[in-house]
Length: 152
Ligand SMILES: CC(C)(COP(=O)(O)OP(=O)(O)OC[C@H]1O[C@@H](n2cnc3c(N)ncnc32)[C@H](O)[C@@H]1OP(=O)(O)O)[C@@H](O)C(=O)NCCC(=O)NCCS
Image (cartoon, rainbow, N blue to C red; front, side, top):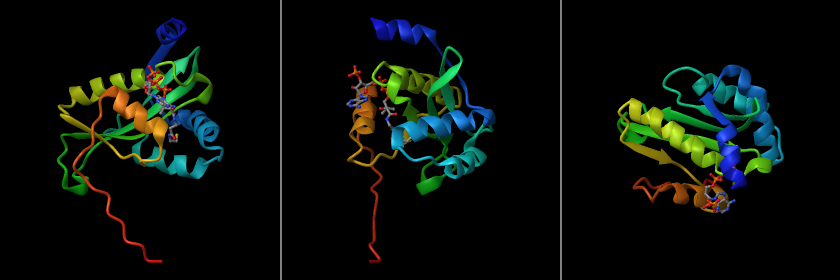
């Protein structure tokens, strides 16, 4: 019930370059480390411009969640009818209230507009919150396998 009220107050909009600090802050809250350089690079690659599909969720004008999405340019030999969820993060104070689901549904609509037929995401199997979330919104195991060669 409370979560429903909260979702009514959430505003989803496209990610802007100005959102960099807010995203760095949420990432910091989630991981415990601050990664401004990493996020700056990611913003340069995907921020704002097409084919980025990235969105943020605002509550009372403050960003509490984000989803970074791109449209595939044949990475891994997959066609450009694939949308990728690169990263998703919700402020720990606002998790488990449906914000990530809301963001996912919104990005799915954006992908649909582009004729995207499939959405891929890469998740470490031990990232249980992410794994559970993707399962909850309907993802299943795909057919790309992560190969690894240990040099040492
Ligand atoms: C995964 C994540 C995005 C989920 O966000 P959220 O807004 O809390 O997700 P929702 O409230 O929409 O959850 C939808 C469903 O996903 C599942 N789920 C979400 N978080 C979960 C968790 N921590 N444990 C188990 N299941 C979870 C549940 O089935 C949930 O439904 P329910 O609340 O009815 O049980 C959030 O936990 C997060 O940001 N985690 C860190 C992700 C990360 O490391 N990102 C990279 C760095 S930014």
